[in-house]
Image 1 (spheres, rainbow, N blue to C red):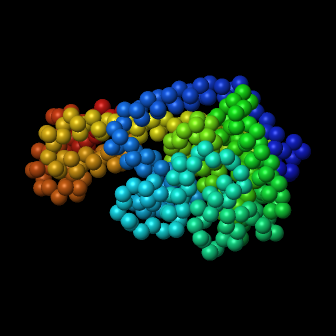
Image 2: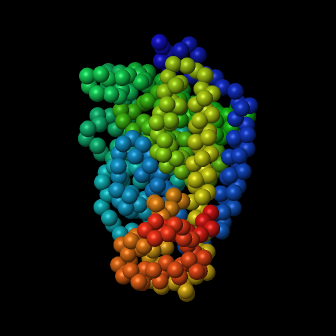
Image 3: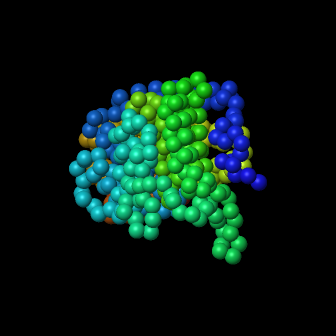
Length: 367
Protein backbone atom coordinates (compact mmCIF):
# COMPACT_ATOMS: atom_id res chain seq x y z
CA UNK A 1 0.00 0.00 0.00
CA UNK A 2 1.36 3.41 -0.97
CA UNK A 3 2.04 6.14 1.56
CA UNK A 4 0.05 9.34 1.04
CA UNK A 5 2.99 11.27 -0.46
CA UNK A 6 3.38 8.52 -3.08
CA UNK A 7 -0.17 8.98 -4.40
CA UNK A 8 -0.61 10.63 -7.80
CA UNK A 9 -2.57 13.69 -6.60
CA UNK A 10 -0.52 14.38 -3.46
CA UNK A 11 -0.83 16.88 -1.82
CA UNK A 12 -4.32 17.64 -3.14
CA UNK A 13 -6.35 16.64 -0.08
CA UNK A 14 -10.01 15.77 -0.52
CA UNK A 15 -12.73 17.12 1.79
CA UNK A 16 -16.18 18.73 1.83
CA UNK A 17 -15.86 22.29 3.10
CA UNK A 18 -19.62 22.76 3.55
CA UNK A 19 -19.56 20.32 6.48
CA UNK A 20 -17.10 22.55 8.34
CA UNK A 21 -18.73 25.94 7.82
CA UNK A 22 -20.56 26.03 11.16
CA UNK A 23 -17.35 25.30 13.03
CA UNK A 24 -15.67 28.32 11.48
CA UNK A 25 -18.62 30.49 12.52
CA UNK A 26 -18.34 29.17 16.08
CA UNK A 27 -14.60 29.83 16.03
CA UNK A 28 -15.13 33.48 15.06
CA UNK A 29 -17.80 33.93 17.74
CA UNK A 30 -15.39 32.50 20.32
CA UNK A 31 -12.66 34.86 19.15
CA UNK A 32 -14.97 37.79 19.82
CA UNK A 33 -15.84 36.40 23.24
CA UNK A 34 -12.18 35.84 24.11
CA UNK A 35 -11.22 39.38 23.07
CA UNK A 36 -14.10 40.80 25.09
CA UNK A 37 -13.06 38.89 28.21
CA UNK A 38 -9.42 39.96 27.87
CA UNK A 39 -10.50 43.59 27.93
CA UNK A 40 -11.85 43.06 31.45
CA UNK A 41 -8.63 41.51 32.80
CA UNK A 42 -6.66 43.97 34.92
CA UNK A 43 -3.40 45.10 33.34
CA UNK A 44 -1.60 43.86 36.45
CA UNK A 45 -2.90 40.34 35.75
CA UNK A 46 -2.42 40.17 31.98
CA UNK A 47 1.23 39.17 32.21
CA UNK A 48 0.39 36.38 34.67
CA UNK A 49 -2.39 35.15 32.39
CA UNK A 50 -0.08 35.23 29.37
CA UNK A 51 2.60 33.29 31.25
CA UNK A 52 0.04 30.75 32.45
CA UNK A 53 -1.39 30.06 28.99
CA UNK A 54 1.99 29.88 27.24
CA UNK A 55 3.60 27.71 29.92
CA UNK A 56 0.67 25.27 29.97
CA UNK A 57 0.98 24.82 26.20
CA UNK A 58 4.76 24.40 26.43
CA UNK A 59 4.34 21.76 29.13
CA UNK A 60 1.52 19.95 27.30
CA UNK A 61 3.11 19.84 23.84
CA UNK A 62 6.20 18.23 25.40
CA UNK A 63 4.11 15.78 27.44
CA UNK A 64 2.39 14.61 24.25
CA UNK A 65 5.81 13.40 23.11
CA UNK A 66 6.42 11.67 26.44
CA UNK A 67 8.74 14.39 27.75
CA UNK A 68 7.90 15.47 31.31
CA UNK A 69 9.22 18.93 32.12
CA UNK A 70 9.45 20.81 35.40
CA UNK A 71 6.50 23.24 35.42
CA UNK A 72 8.23 25.90 37.50
CA UNK A 73 11.27 25.84 35.23
CA UNK A 74 9.06 26.21 32.15
CA UNK A 75 7.28 29.16 33.77
CA UNK A 76 10.61 30.75 34.66
CA UNK A 77 11.84 30.34 31.07
CA UNK A 78 8.61 31.79 29.66
CA UNK A 79 8.99 34.84 31.91
CA UNK A 80 12.63 35.23 30.93
CA UNK A 81 11.77 35.20 27.22
CA UNK A 82 8.97 37.72 27.79
CA UNK A 83 11.36 40.04 29.66
CA UNK A 84 9.46 39.80 32.94
CA UNK A 85 10.95 39.75 36.44
CA UNK A 86 11.83 36.19 37.41
CA UNK A 87 13.50 34.26 40.18
CA UNK A 88 16.23 32.97 37.81
CA UNK A 89 15.28 29.35 38.44
CA UNK A 90 17.60 27.17 36.41
CA UNK A 91 15.96 25.49 33.42
CA UNK A 92 17.05 22.43 31.48
CA UNK A 93 17.79 22.86 27.74
CA UNK A 94 14.47 21.16 26.91
CA UNK A 95 12.49 23.51 29.15
CA UNK A 96 14.30 26.59 27.88
CA UNK A 97 13.93 25.48 24.26
CA UNK A 98 10.18 24.86 24.22
CA UNK A 99 9.63 28.05 26.25
CA UNK A 100 11.55 30.07 23.66
CA UNK A 101 9.45 28.53 20.90
CA UNK A 102 6.15 29.38 22.63
CA UNK A 103 7.18 32.99 23.21
CA UNK A 104 8.41 33.31 19.62
CA UNK A 105 4.96 32.22 18.42
CA UNK A 106 3.43 34.92 20.61
CA UNK A 107 5.83 37.72 19.63
CA UNK A 108 6.61 36.99 15.99
CA UNK A 109 3.32 35.81 14.50
CA UNK A 110 3.66 38.46 11.75
CA UNK A 111 6.81 36.85 10.39
CA UNK A 112 6.38 35.46 6.89
CA UNK A 113 6.74 31.68 6.53
CA UNK A 114 9.94 30.51 4.90
CA UNK A 115 12.58 27.82 5.40
CA UNK A 116 14.42 29.93 7.96
CA UNK A 117 11.30 30.18 10.10
CA UNK A 118 11.19 26.40 10.46
CA UNK A 119 14.96 26.21 10.93
CA UNK A 120 14.79 28.78 13.73
CA UNK A 121 11.98 26.93 15.46
CA UNK A 122 13.96 23.70 15.24
CA UNK A 123 17.08 25.32 16.71
CA UNK A 124 15.02 26.71 19.59
CA UNK A 125 13.42 23.37 20.32
CA UNK A 126 16.55 21.24 20.00
CA UNK A 127 18.55 23.80 21.99
CA UNK A 128 22.01 22.38 21.36
CA UNK A 129 21.13 18.69 21.73
CA UNK A 130 24.17 16.55 20.97
CA UNK A 131 22.24 13.41 20.01
CA UNK A 132 20.72 15.09 16.94
CA UNK A 133 22.88 15.28 13.84
CA UNK A 134 20.87 17.86 11.90
CA UNK A 135 19.78 20.87 13.98
CA UNK A 136 18.33 23.95 12.31
CA UNK A 137 18.12 22.18 8.96
CA UNK A 138 16.05 19.45 7.37
CA UNK A 139 17.01 15.83 7.89
CA UNK A 140 19.57 14.44 5.46
CA UNK A 141 20.19 10.88 6.63
CA UNK A 142 19.84 8.09 4.07
CA UNK A 143 17.82 5.86 6.38
CA UNK A 144 14.03 6.21 5.97
CA UNK A 145 12.19 8.41 8.47
CA UNK A 146 9.82 5.94 10.09
CA UNK A 147 7.33 6.12 12.93
CA UNK A 148 7.55 2.79 14.69
CA UNK A 149 6.17 1.49 17.97
CA UNK A 150 6.21 -1.78 19.87
CA UNK A 151 9.16 -3.74 21.20
CA UNK A 152 12.33 -4.46 19.26
CA UNK A 153 11.33 -8.05 18.55
CA UNK A 154 7.95 -7.08 17.11
CA UNK A 155 7.99 -3.45 15.87
CA UNK A 156 4.97 -1.99 14.10
CA UNK A 157 5.48 0.53 11.28
CA UNK A 158 2.85 3.27 11.41
CA UNK A 159 4.25 5.66 8.84
CA UNK A 160 7.20 6.29 6.56
CA UNK A 161 7.84 9.90 5.48
CA UNK A 162 9.29 11.06 2.16
CA UNK A 163 13.00 10.27 1.82
CA UNK A 164 15.44 12.96 2.94
CA UNK A 165 16.44 13.94 -0.61
CA UNK A 166 12.81 14.97 -1.28
CA UNK A 167 12.27 16.98 1.91
CA UNK A 168 13.51 20.36 0.70
CA UNK A 169 11.30 20.16 -2.40
CA UNK A 170 8.28 19.11 -0.31
CA UNK A 171 8.84 21.89 2.24
CA UNK A 172 9.43 24.48 -0.49
CA UNK A 173 6.13 23.51 -2.12
CA UNK A 174 4.42 23.55 1.27
CA UNK A 175 5.69 27.03 2.17
CA UNK A 176 4.54 28.37 -1.20
CA UNK A 177 1.11 26.85 -0.54
CA UNK A 178 0.89 28.62 2.84
CA UNK A 179 1.83 31.97 1.33
CA UNK A 180 -0.48 31.55 -1.64
CA UNK A 181 -3.49 30.72 0.52
CA UNK A 182 -2.83 32.90 3.56
CA UNK A 183 -5.67 35.22 2.49
CA UNK A 184 -7.85 32.59 0.82
CA UNK A 185 -10.71 32.42 3.34
CA UNK A 186 -13.18 30.94 0.85
CA UNK A 187 -11.27 27.74 0.09
CA UNK A 188 -9.40 27.56 3.38
CA UNK A 189 -11.23 29.04 6.39
CA UNK A 190 -8.90 29.57 9.36
CA UNK A 191 -9.62 26.32 11.23
CA UNK A 192 -9.32 24.24 8.07
CA UNK A 193 -6.18 26.10 6.96
CA UNK A 194 -4.49 25.45 10.33
CA UNK A 195 -5.60 21.80 10.36
CA UNK A 196 -4.33 21.10 6.84
CA UNK A 197 -1.04 22.93 7.47
CA UNK A 198 -0.48 20.78 10.55
CA UNK A 199 -1.30 17.55 8.71
CA UNK A 200 0.82 18.29 5.65
CA UNK A 201 3.79 19.19 7.84
CA UNK A 202 3.43 15.91 9.73
CA UNK A 203 3.21 13.98 6.47
CA UNK A 204 6.49 15.53 5.31
CA UNK A 205 8.12 15.06 8.74
CA UNK A 206 11.08 17.23 7.69
CA UNK A 207 13.22 17.13 10.84
CA UNK A 208 15.19 14.44 12.60
CA UNK A 209 13.22 15.17 15.79
CA UNK A 210 10.66 17.68 17.04
CA UNK A 211 8.16 17.34 14.18
CA UNK A 212 5.13 16.93 16.45
CA UNK A 213 5.89 19.97 18.58
CA UNK A 214 6.75 22.15 15.58
CA UNK A 215 3.66 20.93 13.72
CA UNK A 216 1.44 21.95 16.63
CA UNK A 217 3.25 25.27 16.89
CA UNK A 218 2.59 25.78 13.18
CA UNK A 219 -1.17 25.42 13.70
CA UNK A 220 -1.08 28.12 16.39
CA UNK A 221 1.09 30.34 14.19
CA UNK A 222 -1.34 29.98 11.26
CA UNK A 223 -4.28 31.05 13.43
CA UNK A 224 -2.46 34.06 14.93
CA UNK A 225 -1.30 35.19 11.51
CA UNK A 226 -4.81 34.93 10.11
CA UNK A 227 -6.24 36.90 13.05
CA UNK A 228 -3.51 39.53 12.92
CA UNK A 229 -2.85 39.19 16.65
CA UNK A 230 -1.40 36.66 19.09
CA UNK A 231 -3.86 33.85 19.63
CA UNK A 232 -4.19 31.83 22.81
CA UNK A 233 -5.49 28.32 22.25
CA UNK A 234 -5.05 25.51 24.77
CA UNK A 235 -5.18 22.88 22.08
CA UNK A 236 -1.97 21.00 23.03
CA UNK A 237 -3.34 20.81 26.56
CA UNK A 238 -6.59 19.47 25.08
CA UNK A 239 -4.75 16.93 22.90
CA UNK A 240 -2.88 15.63 25.92
CA UNK A 241 -6.14 14.58 27.57
CA UNK A 242 -6.64 12.00 24.80
CA UNK A 243 -3.51 11.91 22.67
CA UNK A 244 -4.37 8.46 21.31
CA UNK A 245 -7.28 9.98 19.36
CA UNK A 246 -4.97 12.70 18.09
CA UNK A 247 -2.45 10.20 16.73
CA UNK A 248 -5.23 8.02 15.30
CA UNK A 249 -6.69 10.98 13.41
CA UNK A 250 -3.37 11.52 11.64
CA UNK A 251 -2.59 7.85 11.08
CA UNK A 252 -5.88 7.19 9.31
CA UNK A 253 -4.74 9.57 6.53
CA UNK A 254 -1.43 7.77 5.93
CA UNK A 255 -2.65 6.05 2.76
CA UNK A 256 -5.46 8.28 1.48
CA UNK A 257 -6.07 11.85 0.35
CA UNK A 258 -9.59 12.04 1.79
CA UNK A 259 -9.05 13.81 5.11
CA UNK A 260 -12.67 14.58 6.07
CA UNK A 261 -12.58 12.58 9.32
CA UNK A 262 -9.27 14.17 10.28
CA UNK A 263 -10.65 17.66 9.64
CA UNK A 264 -13.79 16.90 11.66
CA UNK A 265 -11.63 15.81 14.57
CA UNK A 266 -8.95 18.50 14.38
CA UNK A 267 -11.33 21.43 13.97
CA UNK A 268 -13.28 20.16 16.99
CA UNK A 269 -9.98 19.96 18.84
CA UNK A 270 -9.10 23.56 18.02
CA UNK A 271 -12.56 24.70 19.12
CA UNK A 272 -12.25 22.77 22.39
CA UNK A 273 -8.82 24.31 23.00
CA UNK A 274 -10.29 27.72 22.32
CA UNK A 275 -13.15 27.12 24.76
CA UNK A 276 -10.72 25.87 27.42
CA UNK A 277 -8.78 29.11 27.01
CA UNK A 278 -11.97 31.10 27.48
CA UNK A 279 -12.65 29.15 30.70
CA UNK A 280 -9.15 30.01 31.93
CA UNK A 281 -9.73 33.72 31.29
CA UNK A 282 -13.12 33.51 33.03
CA UNK A 283 -11.41 31.87 36.00
CA UNK A 284 -8.91 34.74 36.23
CA UNK A 285 -11.77 37.24 36.23
CA UNK A 286 -13.62 35.18 38.85
CA UNK A 287 -10.51 35.09 41.03
CA UNK A 288 -10.10 38.86 40.72
CA UNK A 289 -13.70 39.46 41.73
CA UNK A 290 -13.45 37.12 44.72
CA UNK A 291 -10.41 38.86 46.17
CA UNK A 292 -11.76 42.34 45.44
CA UNK A 293 -15.03 41.57 47.19
CA UNK A 294 -13.72 39.62 50.19
CA UNK A 295 -10.08 40.70 50.63
CA UNK A 296 -10.73 42.59 53.88
CA UNK A 297 -12.69 39.64 55.30
CA UNK A 298 -10.12 36.91 54.63
CA UNK A 299 -7.29 35.89 56.92
CA UNK A 300 -3.83 34.90 55.64
CA UNK A 301 -4.60 31.17 55.82
CA UNK A 302 -7.78 31.51 53.79
CA UNK A 303 -5.99 33.58 51.16
CA UNK A 304 -3.23 30.97 50.89
CA UNK A 305 -5.71 28.14 50.42
CA UNK A 306 -7.78 30.02 47.83
CA UNK A 307 -4.67 30.87 45.83
CA UNK A 308 -3.72 27.20 45.90
CA UNK A 309 -7.14 26.23 44.58
CA UNK A 310 -7.04 28.83 41.79
CA UNK A 311 -3.56 27.66 40.81
CA UNK A 312 -5.10 24.29 39.93
CA UNK A 313 -6.78 26.00 36.99
CA UNK A 314 -10.14 25.16 35.45
CA UNK A 315 -9.90 21.51 36.51
CA UNK A 316 -10.05 22.65 40.13
CA UNK A 317 -8.58 20.98 43.20
CA UNK A 318 -8.48 17.27 42.38
CA UNK A 319 -11.13 15.46 44.36
CA UNK A 320 -12.17 18.66 46.09
CA UNK A 321 -10.62 20.39 49.10
CA UNK A 322 -10.68 18.37 52.34
CA UNK A 323 -9.91 19.46 55.88
CA UNK A 324 -6.65 17.49 55.72
CA UNK A 325 -5.69 19.35 52.51
CA UNK A 326 -6.33 22.60 54.31
CA UNK A 327 -4.08 21.50 57.17
CA UNK A 328 -1.32 20.46 54.76
CA UNK A 329 -1.41 23.83 53.01
CA UNK A 330 -1.60 26.03 56.11
CA UNK A 331 -0.31 23.93 59.00
CA UNK A 332 -3.33 25.03 61.02
CA UNK A 333 -4.81 22.84 63.82
CA UNK A 334 -8.11 21.03 63.33
CA UNK A 335 -10.28 23.54 65.20
CA UNK A 336 -8.88 26.45 63.16
CA UNK A 337 -9.37 24.55 59.91
CA UNK A 338 -13.01 23.85 60.76
CA UNK A 339 -13.60 27.52 61.61
CA UNK A 340 -11.89 28.78 58.43
CA UNK A 341 -13.78 26.42 56.14
CA UNK A 342 -17.09 27.33 57.73
CA UNK A 343 -16.23 31.00 57.27
CA UNK A 344 -15.48 30.51 53.57
CA UNK A 345 -18.80 28.69 53.14
CA UNK A 346 -20.71 31.46 54.94
CA UNK A 347 -19.10 34.06 52.67
CA UNK A 348 -20.31 32.07 49.66
CA UNK A 349 -16.80 31.48 48.31
CA UNK A 350 -16.82 27.72 48.89
CA UNK A 351 -19.63 25.18 48.79
CA UNK A 352 -19.68 22.07 50.96
CA UNK A 353 -20.53 18.56 49.78
CA UNK A 354 -20.62 15.23 51.60
CA UNK A 355 -20.46 14.51 55.32
CA UNK A 356 -17.84 13.44 57.87
CA UNK A 357 -14.70 12.05 56.20
CA UNK A 358 -16.28 12.47 52.77
CA UNK A 359 -16.74 16.23 53.21
CA UNK A 360 -15.23 18.21 50.37
CA UNK A 361 -15.22 21.90 49.44
CA UNK A 362 -15.36 23.47 45.98
CA UNK A 363 -15.36 27.00 44.63
CA UNK A 364 -18.92 28.28 44.56
CA UNK A 365 -20.40 29.68 41.31
CA UNK A 366 -17.19 28.85 39.46
CA UNK A 367 -17.48 29.76 35.75
